[in-house]
Length: 423
Image (cartoon, rainbow, N blue to C red; front, side, top):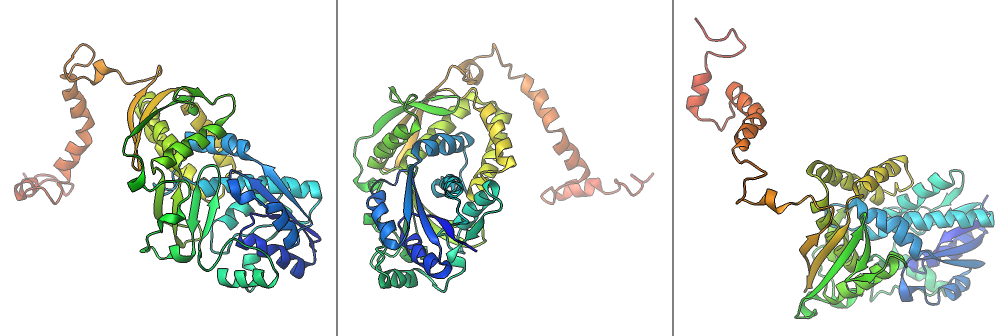
């Protein structure tokens, strides 16, 4: 029996209708919880809306610093990008929201927690895996998997009948999720992958066509993989929140960070998503550039494999797992030499690395030069190639590829495991 439930509340369509639905169907007290992750004006009037919708109280927690330091920075260091393009802004926020939700549920002695994720999406997994990791015995209520509402149209009608104000209208039929890292858009008219989003949908970024005609240069300094300065302005003391906000502003001005993709959801369905991640795009570009000169080849290549798995862990909601902790240990070790400065050129949607330097750099001009011979003797390459290519040569002799000439194939006849060459 559920007497008190803590709802992860955003004030959007789904969570707005869940408050009266929980009260009507469970007869329970509903406590709303909203995480301030940098939604800006989206938090305006949230307290009044939650109470008017039927919540007994609402917690609005400022989690921006924790989000930036404990979630975004580890993700940046990992280099995680889901399916090559998605910088995981929504995915990485869910474990933090669920973590704080569990803390409030324990404080309020609640019987259950609830979320507004649909039964077709990824967020239901991200929320519930965190609940299970941090409070394995708490009851979970997922209305979208229980009620009779079939979609957003039904939800809007449900809200209107109960005088619950919601931001989604039939004239703007798509959902958005905003935080310090990005804004995501999905659903409604965006479900048609051929449909090009209207320019008035975008909030963080200027259209590249309307961006400044003059490029702008910035320099980002890193210490052990963490960004601490932008163009000599020190952000180390105040944490990365202000740094990300500044990069969002300058990157958005130049139209940087827009992505339009069809991704593979965890549940097996393909989904079209449009994202704005200006500051994150700049940071990823700069961080990767610095790693190219500070990490040795084998570490750099293996870390790319780890980054792909790390991205899956975030996307799948497996933040609070032993595997993630173990990967963090590896990643943090790799970041020890990743200190230095990267110079970037921002221009009409493009973020281009034009310079990188580090006291820990493994790049040496005298080694890379084609002119000098003092350190690297080009004659040594012949023996290296012979040994490195030996397996290929042996295979070619014993098992000619179909592409080999007929003469090769005929020359091999009479040899092989069936008794060797005839005498």
